[in-house]
Image 1: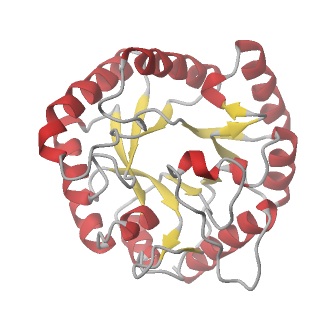
Image 2: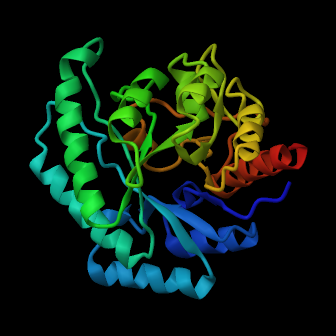
Image 3: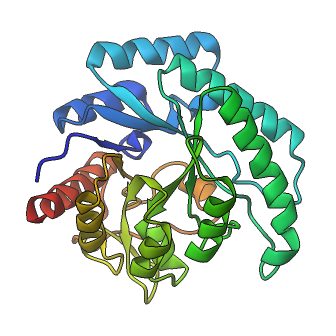
Length: 285
């Protein structure tokens, strides 16, 4: 099948916007989930820089699928006020970039203390959702290693409490595999709340990130079920197939694992491999 709503984290191609745009156009991708760009996360740039980025994307015919924010990716014990101000600023930028979508997280929790910190997570997520609702924004919650919603049951708890027009689920295959969460079980728990997909795969025995379809994420099976059920959201490429600049900040010190394609990949090559793996799956579907 052909699917037009393919997007991705172009900072895995290169840090520079002009390079990101060039390779996205080369691959025929018309959307970007913008995270790092020209030296910082999009949400930390000035209004002038945001306007410059927007104009370059418009001129290239590329639109934002979402802001790839780091919001909610701090320890639950860390101060919240400045973080909430960053969230408000992120929504301002989302409107400037003509998207309602913000990728977010549910806070790093001390190991084994999920129940103890649930109330604090609920309070913070509730504030996010209330503000998003009042300001026409959509929080897309990503399952991520180490946060409250790292596994499907906790993600489902969050969805049961907050899901609606302004709080929906991102389904990340590799992140579930890396915490030993069966992705088919996760899909059954979350299928009614999935609005957005992060496309990457991993192997359960060691957490190695691999191109989609080469791991234990059941990528093809789940995408097939999603499309059969009327899914029309974005498929966002997040290759993680090489140690691109900034990886240590994204993964809290984890070492990037090279994909098993014979040699280390540079950014454009890694993104191209991930893109082709997705196209192969879509063709099969």
